[in-house]
Image (cartoon, rainbow, N blue to C red):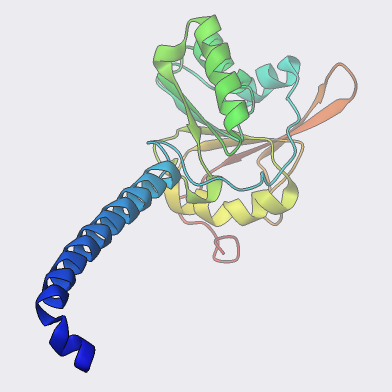
Length: 218
């Protein structure tokens, strides 16, 4: 208390100076934190057409070109179609659909950014980038409702998990072709065997019904 009385004028000045320094320091700290938070938000927000990344559901195994051609034939792909390839890998199915079948639009979706980069490079090399879009997305968070044709090469459990989403988003009459794996209780309309370079491949073909059975839509 004695020290406060003796050095009161000095203390008042010191306190004022101290408060000014503290105020500046606090404000600087707030600004720095705000900038850091903004930078972190900017870095973690995916670009348009992308979602936050996670590990792929299936390993990447390219579909042989002979099988790609048969998948598109089985789906009766033609001009005016909008094709979505789910798990598009290096982009060969969308690229073939545009190059050889003249589809109006082709979209590939893949969760692996490396595959998207590769697919875009292949589309550019083929000169069809203007009619193809590759989206770095999680299939289970994607919307492919504009598709008239859907192709996929996933795994049986992923196909079944994806089935309700297909029924919910796709219009009746949309054609679906799966390479090698079926969709559980949803029986295909056609099953085709295709001889590839090293083995026989199986293709499954469905058409989305107007009223999917309740047991399949869950």
